[in-house]
Each structure stands twice: as C-alpha cells, then as structure tokens.
Length: 421
Image (cartoon, rainbow, N blue to C red; front, top):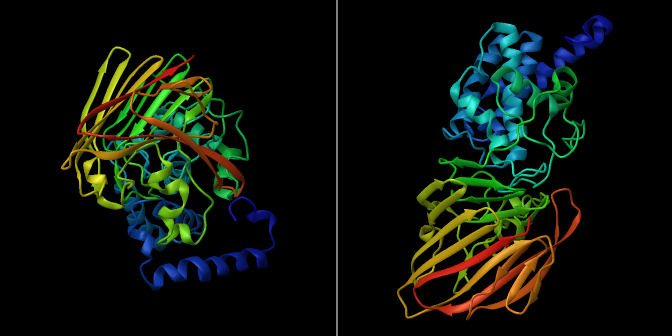
C-alpha cells in the first residue's frame, strides 16, 4: 500500500485495507493470541508481521498491543543473545523483530534496536560461525546456510555488529519460503559490509555453548537442557569441523511432520538421543524435560587451548548412573573428550556415539572420517551403522554413526580426536 498506493486503483486499496482489518486486526482485538506470550520465534514473527501491517495502515491501536509480544520474544533469550532454536530461527524470529523495529522507528522515532540485549542477539550468528559459511546445526538448524543479506546489512549499519561469512554471495534464495519480509528488506537494505573472520573463541554462558576455532578447524559443544524451543535430546553434544566440512556433525532439522510436533518427536532420528554424539548408558539415552539440564563445571581459556566441562547427570534417568561428567579439551588439531562415570553398580554398559554425514572407516583400532581420526581405546569395541533419513527440505540423506561400546567401572574414559588441517 505504501509503495504502490499511488499506482493502485482506489477500489483495490479499499479491499486490501478491509481484508487486513478482517483477517488480522479484528481477530487480534477479539482476544489474546497464544503467541503473544511465547518466548521464542512465534511471538516475533506473528507480532512483527501484524505490527508492520498496522504501521503501514495507520492502525496505532494494534501497534501498542503488539509491543508486549516483542517483549515476550526478547525475554526468551538470555543475556548472551544466543538463539536456542538455532541460526535459521535466529534469521526468522529476530529478522521479523528487526523489520518491525525499523518500521516503528520510521513512524514514531522509538528505537527498539537501541538496547544492549538486542545488540547481543544481533551478534549471535558471527559468534557461532565455524568458518567456511558453516555453523553448528544445534536444535532445528542446518549446518550450511545463507542469512538474509538485508538483515545482516542493516544490523551491521545500525549496531556495528560483525557479519559472519556466509555460504556464497548474498542471495534472494536464503529463505526457501520466499517470505516477503526477508525479500523486500534484501531489496531495500542490502549493502556491501565488512565481513568478520570469526575469532578464536566464543562462549555463550546462558545457552551453555562454546565454540573454538584455529587453523581451518573448529569445535563447538552445547550444554543447555532438554526442553528448549525446537528441542532435541542433545545435552553435551558436539561438532568438529575441518577442511570446510563439519565432519562430526549434528543432524539438525528433520522434515517437519505432524508427529514431529507431537509425542513422536523423539522417535525422529534427528531429535533423538541415539543420533547425537553423546553417551548411552545401559542402552538408554537422555530424556526430555526442563530439569534435564547440564551444569557447566568449568570454562577456561589458556592461549589457544579451551576447556569446557559439563555435568550431564540430570539429563539421564538410568537407575545405576550416579554421576556423568563430560570434559572437552581443545587445542589446534586435537580434541580430547573425557567422560567420567559414577555407577551404583560394579560396572555398566556404555556406548559412546559419534555422528557424521561422512562414512567412517574402521581399521586397526582407529576410526577415520576423512580429515578427522579417533584412536579406539583398549577394551572398547567399535561398530558403525548408517540410516536413511529425510532432511528438512524432504530430501533423502544417509547418515552414519560410530558406537564405541564397553562394560566399564566407575571412572574417567578419554577419547582423542586428531584433525588433519
């Protein structure tokens, strides 16, 4: 209406306004929408779209109502600015927040971006960047993707936040749904902006995420809990990136089906504990729930070495498991993973799981995934299997899993990964 109003017949303009009033504004005014208090992307997307329409049509009564939904959206993110739903949902939810915020600033002068918390949220993509246009596919994310160019340009211009390296040139295909909000802002706002090479280390304490990078390789791990938005049973999981490829990987978002958003969610491999790089104890994986969380025991940086330790005990419901801690020690070219178990029994059966999209090679006490190798500790039996799954866009994928299994007593067990360039 604002762009084409002078070129569109008055009858069309009247019909557009009437339909928006009927379909958007009237339902909003009839009662409270469930998403108005949602502390995740839905509040920003719904309120952002409705609010932008209200600003364009002069429906001030609706705008005031929707600012509360934006406050709910912001409240769902910790002080570190991390999006627990993953980078793709950062672009979706935070993108709509920014589009509304800039429209509001244009109309009223109120600036929702002038907020330290919003600045932290804006910096999230660069902070989790692994290099080479990739990011950890935690929750319902994808490891490789392009952010909306207009959104990144505006955040760089307004807030001075670093812009991550993306996979290829700016594109109108960053959103497979081709939403008008993203496309239009890319047309209006996209500029050439300085690209920030990621620094050697990121720690997001509220999300419990650490990222370390060096010499073309990177590692990321997460704590968190098992009731996050777009949750997977993945407390303590990690990814390992080398030579432009996330070799030990997180499978990210599956194809969205009705069952995935109902009780069948954790039967879907991508969301299940059994297809994340975490231990199984007595054949059991992690269980869902907000109380099923990791406690960060240590985060330390010494030069280019990073230590990240988590207590994962609460994520499991295994009667004989008294304590489980996982410690990552990263330095360039090497990741040491130590899992320490405490059992109420003499010993227990443990399977260490490592997930990849690359087919592993098991030979002579060694597992190799291209540039990444793992020496199998004495007493552990290595086996590999694969599974056909449907990716987020419905495409068929073959994914691989290595399991190192042993019956072990209480104590610490170390697994060392070496990275070739």
